[in-house]
Length: 262
Image 1 (cartoon, rainbow, N blue to C red):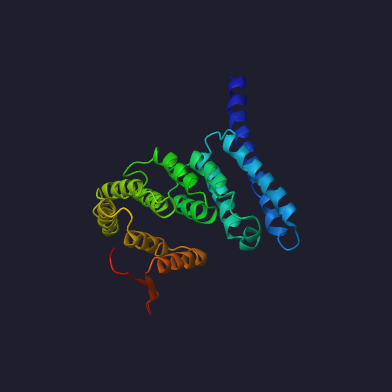
Image 2: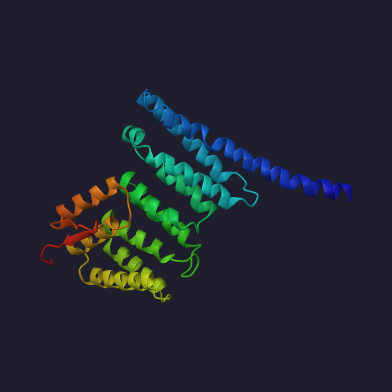
């Protein structure tokens, strides 16, 4: 009985120590990247990036003792600090973006909020759309039309990456069609809008796989998806390069003027 009591105490203690260890290793390397941006050389920053990558690899492989969601939350907070540090990112780039999401999606593939960040940071900033799509596909294996709520957005993000960054209209068509199918299971207004617009996009891509109109519409999705200013500027540049025009209304919304349909 005494042995059982000791084991019952030891198991949660070990788990707590491990999670505490995660917390202790959570910030030092990342904090170095933030604190050193004023004076660090590019070589120093690159060394610290390598150290951060090793830390993320460890977090991906370490046992979680049932605290997967907790680890995913902490790593996502790390990512937000990493992504938001524009001064250092201008020097080193965004190559660690998919490394953060490898950990997060392994630990908590139903963490819906991360998929939009994954798509933007990995495809748009790190220029690794194949990696973003592969991670989305990995996460989708654990999703269903109803779990988590609004999981149909993941298919839309994937479709955007496939169309805009790989030029794979067929794959994008399938992703938007699946998003429409999943969203159609719900009767709320938001889901119905997503179902209708995704279905229209899929049908248009099936008829016009190389259409600039479809690309402009997809960049408009990015623009209106509550993204940061840099992403907004990139989306506007891409829309204008394709022959469209973006007008910001007095209410702060964006109106897209399309060129003649091709």
